[in-house]
Image 1: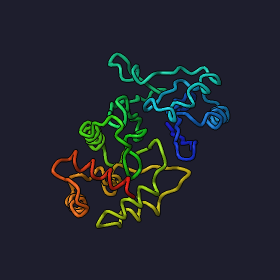
Image 2: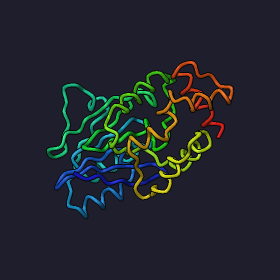
Image 3: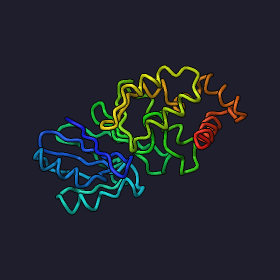
Length: 236
C-alpha cells in the first residue's frame, strides 16, 4: 500500500491511498493531478472520501466523480457502524474526531493517519464548534496511537506553526530538527514529533502552563489552556 500527497489551493493537501490496482481519494481537491496520476499508474479510483465538509476539502468531489467511476461516500456513511471500508485487502479505520467541525474524522491506514484539519504538523485546527473540551478529547484519542504513526494533515502550515512553537517554547531543539527535515513536496510528521513540538498536544506540560501564565492567560483547566494557546496563536 502507498500514499501520494498533492498540494492545491496554495496550502491544502489532498491524498491518494493506493495499492496494485485500486485507489481511494481523500480531500481530493487536486483533480487534474490526481487523474493524471491514476492514469499513469493504471489505477482505478474506488472511493472519494472527505475528512470533513468544508468547501476547501470537498472542492474536488464533483470533478473526480465526473472523471472516474468512483463512488462518493459521505462522512455520515463513513462512520456508520454498519459499514466497513477496505482498499484492496487493507482496512481503513475511521476515527470520529469532532472539534474543528462536528463531522471531523481521521483515516488510519497502515502507519498513516490522515487528519484533515484536526491535527496539523505543528499545530491544530480552529475550533469552529466552540467545544474545545471535545476537541481536546479528540486529540487525546489520536495521542493513544503508536508514536511512529505518520501524520498527514489537511494543510501545510509547517513554517508558521514552527515559528509559533519556537517563539513560545523553552526548548526549541525539537522545532529546529523538524524544520531541517521538512520538505514542502511531502509534508508529514510522526506522532512522536508532534508530542515533542506541538503545543496543543502538550497542554499539561509545565513549560506550556508557565508560558501562558507569563502572558497573563488562564491555565486552570485543559480547556482554558487550549483557548489561551489559540489566543496567542492569533496574536502571532
